[in-house]
Image (cartoon, rainbow, N blue to C red; front, side, top):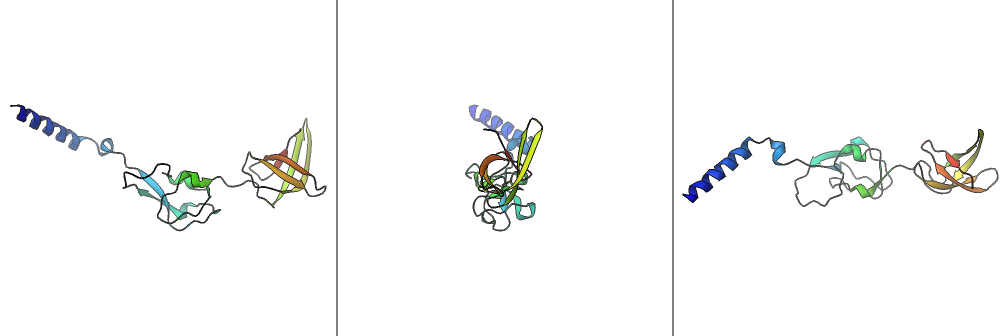
Length: 155
């Protein structure tokens, strides 16, 4: 009699598995892979990547899973076509690039000053960067803004 009990339990489990929605059984994961080789420093565009289903259950974690995660980011290293893109290999684009002409601004109690300068180092929006004033040659530090300006702060 116990053998029949196991058969009934197995049959019920099998029936449940067949009736359960496909998504309830296992969630399909996707990975973003380049369609062409992307070199270090290049901005990733939507036409250069695609989503593919993950078929390897032992894939290392930390890879990008949606195109929205990678589009507009810059590659820190060469990304090979067809291989997953590790999130750690991406960064936001620089708002200020070393050697580029920048506008230096200073705002204090309604007094607004600006000058031309040259960035001494790269920086993303919000980063503290050093810039050299073109007219005086003085080096100052300030916050890189998204529009490419550098706002200096009072010491």
